[in-house]
Amino acid sequence: MTIARLKITLEAIEPVVSRTLEVPVDIRLERLHLVIQAAMGWENYHLYEFMVGEIRWGLPDPDFGTDALPVAKSSLAGVASTAGTAPICYIYDFGGRPSCDASHTMSLSTRTNIEPRLRSDAL
Image 1 (spheres, rainbow, N blue to C red):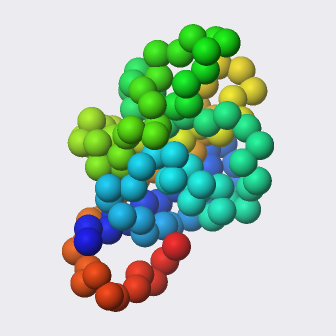
Image 2: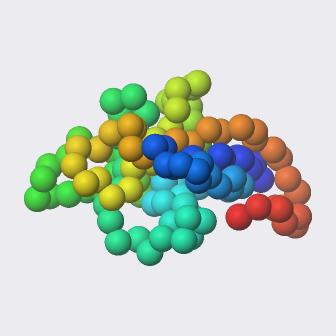
């Protein structure tokens, strides 16, 4: 199994709030959202999107019509491939137009192959 180590940092907050997570690289974005919610101690009350440049992944919203790609069909591996060296943003609680300015940035620091029966040290 290939594991991705993510460092997630909440932007524009002092002191710095960050979490380091290890997740399967093929995790679907809808599941990654729930992992981030648990790691941050939040309760999944708001809309969310992942964003790389102008490309967005989110929940379908028939009321507002969105051009976001579906999180249920997208994986971290696909987003990381799209991102290259660009930051991946996780936007939670829009409070206005979604942007990477007041969001979480994710950096994918390592990918590791682990034996299927070994447990990871991080969430």
